[in-house]
Length: 317
Image (cartoon, rainbow, N blue to C red; front, side):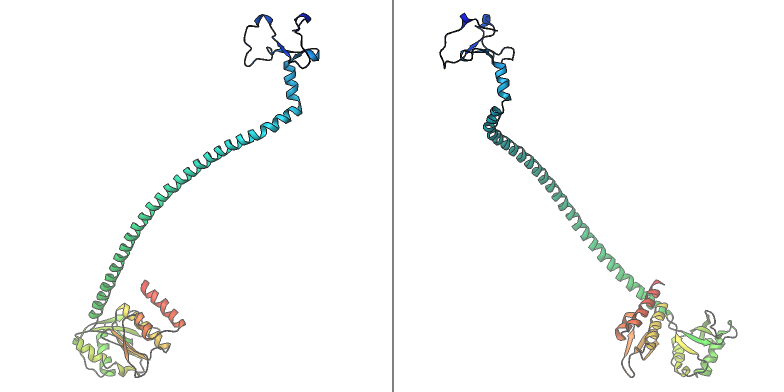
């Protein structure tokens, strides 16, 4: 749009430019708050000799580095402060949310831990009670086993074992026992004094056997057993022992090992009870278990290992 010279208003130097509407017929219409580039007014600059298109002026201004640098210098602190505040708010919100979530998780885990600790405490109490009950039961079992073993030994109190005996007829062991008592022990008995006798196990390499003999009463048994020392130097190497339970035989076996290791000087049994001496003419000690033997005759390391292995084997049996 152009302006004719007659429409020009007289201006002097330094006067403001005149904004001319693009459409004179709509001069009464208000200028839009946000005009488009098609409706931007044209500026009449008398001192520049004509009209200036405002669109080009704005574009050129925004393209000018000096202008943009000046604007940046002014706006940067404002934007930086605004952005910093916004970032702080965002970060604070994020941290608070994360902290709250973490706090909730910690509280939940703490509750679970407390609950588990209570359950563990209850289970520990139950376990301790069960252990006590098991210990009491084991003690009772040991007591019962000891009584059973004692009764078993009592049932053998009238029996003797004759070792290294030459047996011509396994079906006639009574006469062999009677002959040994008469010839070697100077004890007169008759077959009527014997309730029952028989060979135990197989003969050894020398062809000799072991005879177990149940006598009529304890008195007859004691008369024979009290004379067993007379067999000490017998050339036939016959010897007499009491009929012991399996457990007491195992204890005697360990006593024999202790004697070979010179921890025990002598030992014997009387009515199923085992006695030892650890020195000549010393005090006798009643041995009821391997622990008793180790207490009165402490073994050396090598002997202790041997005893322990043997004791474990007996326990498994």
